[in-house]
Amino acid sequence: MSQVRVLVGTRKGAFVLTSDGARERWDVSGPHFGGWEIYHLKGSPADPNRLYASQSSSWFGQVIQRSSDGGRTWETVGNKFAYDGVTGTHLWYDGTPHPWEFARVWHLEPSLTDPDTVYAGAEDAALFRSTDGGQSWQELPGLRTHPSASVWQPGAGGMCLHTILVDPIHPGRMFVAISAAGAFRSDDAGTTWRPINRGLRSEQIPDPTAEVGHCVHRIAMHPSRPDVLFMQKHWDVMRSDDAGESWREVSGNLPTDFGFPIDVHAHEPETIYVVPIKSDSEHYLPEGKLRVYRSRTGGHEWEPLTKGLPQSHCYVNVLRDAMAVDTLDPCGVYFGTTGGQVYASADAGDHWAPIVRDLPSVVSVEVQTLR
Amino acid sequence: MSVRVVLPAHLRTLARAGAEVKVDVVGPVTQRAVLDALEADYPMLRGTIRDHDTQRRRAFLRLFACGEDLSHESPDARLPDAVASGAEPLLVVGAMAGG
Image (cartoon, one colour):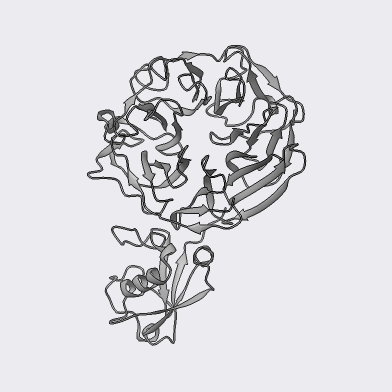
């Protein structure tokens, strides 16, 4: 019998939601690490009982937690994230040079094949890797020392490396995204990196088509077709068919193309999901309606998905790491809101129901399909 | 010397310890010596009170004892005799904030 485990990071702790394959009745466990900000938690594809969680606090800094039993028990592992070598500077909000300072881990991406190998995306932007189950962390400095890094600038949420995609087909290929530097690709397992932002256009920066400086909010891929990437940029939903070499806009008929998450259906590589947000100065839903938009054509043509979602007086946001899909058939789609709701659809978005309604503000949602 | 240390709530949870812990300090009882001993007994606290590398106190934490704020004292200054003797605890205090 299949099971689904939804891992929810919130501003005040982590929650683990479990159900059988019907995805109708849910067991809710948590809060784990109550009172701490849990930016992200994710399970290892190679060992689903191995979970990693990023726990942080403005008071006490960064903690990494690890579970070996699917989230029932946790142990602290290494929390020393030291930049490798001379840190140099990036640009601060006011345009002056500012030294790299570690603040927190935004995203943890376990290896596809080794439960003890996990990548961590940090603020200030850098990529770290552990090969001993999180006990120790080493920076992959080729990203932070890219020649363009001295002109990277933080977005409003900090200069965070929030997206890590490991290509399951091309050995050594990885993608990351940084706000507000853009998207980057490595073809040598993270040793060297290059910007992949050609085709992006951001009117908020002096040169709208600059090589770096774009506020990329999220990138998603389907594992069967990793050369096709989908991006929710600050404004604009984008698509690349050549592993990021070039991008084209596919916002189409969306009511607004500002937003944070984007994800791909588990079995239909051309079916994608976004949650349009009113604007970058109004981080809430347009018209007070919670609508997920689905395109079955890889962009351009979008349909609103509303059944079971509030269609009046709803002014939440859905953050960049707060949407995920399971691999059951039909595909399940999940997202969490800044209002503390976690919604699930067991039919690819046609119908929705809340799993929980009143959690702390949701930062991240991940799903594990357990068979 | 057995020194008493009172931890803020979140660090008690992290350390899986009670409100007050006792640590054995060899030699002069200073902030550095007490925190070194604390981190040796509770390695999960490394980096949460002091920076890993610089050993500087994190900005939103303070160290109190005997009714005094000792946060800006040298980490190598001796703590009050009452702390060294175990009569009074060293308090690790998180800044008050809402939200």
